[in-house]
Image 1 (tube, one colour):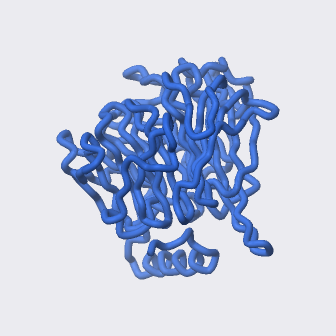
Image 2: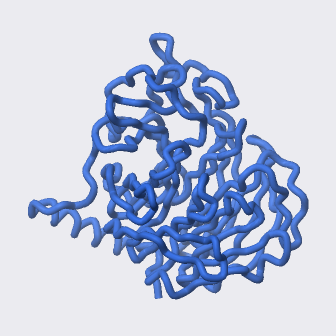
Length: 392
């Protein structure tokens, strides 16, 4: 049986152990790396665990955020899905330059523009549907909005949500079904077969559904591979047969899904923490961003043949918060050389920083950095931050 999301008491005990290891000279987790830079920080009303940039061209400025909280008095699981529109100077943002807040010297800042939200019964994961396919599904209707989101919820259901607009009542329900007997922790659409939707849960099951027919009957189901709950599933954007999963058993696994009835694990890595989120880099096909809960955030790199995974870059949890949500910005690739960023650190005071035009991704000497969105659970923080993708 897999472990549930940590309680406050468990969190305090784990962090105390981590601090004790640090006092004894041990390694408390990933250390900070150079050139990590805070862009934006925001407090959310509930515990934050999802951050998802839209991958659809023309909509890459859209950011979905999800929250979850257990109401102790009633034992009710509540959550909220936020839709944010970012403003920035980079190509393909879709909203034009920022309003000028925090801008200096001809640069422009990344900032948050319009937003809307909808209440749901505890959100553990949100995933955008790739462009080019209608939503469908059990009892669903045709999508006519901006984009479709899959939501993994605490009541055991998976729901398809439609983003109609980034204002007012901009999020509506397309369909829902009972997917697992316990909390559904993750969901994701197949990148090529867009009607296929994956899910993972506290019951240790990893499943796939065909949303064109009855999604309540999975076309694939595995309960033997993961030794604990399946926290995250991330199909590769350029290799349709590759899917990454992460679990409370602290392992990241790469699956070859060409034979859906008998998929194969081709590589795996112990990250030293429960893997709550995995996200492939939009332009470096062998890079994964991992949110490893008490072990912070990490950047993983797969070998050319996918047979090996390595932890190449990591940075500490901001304020020792639990690392939950993580995603890369999905915009176009950067130019070979971009303006040098101002000096800053990941634990700087919240606020927008000044970025040069076209500075959506950066190449800093022999390394590179890219814009990422993260969420930390108990301090309810959502951040935008530059992360290196190679060792310094």
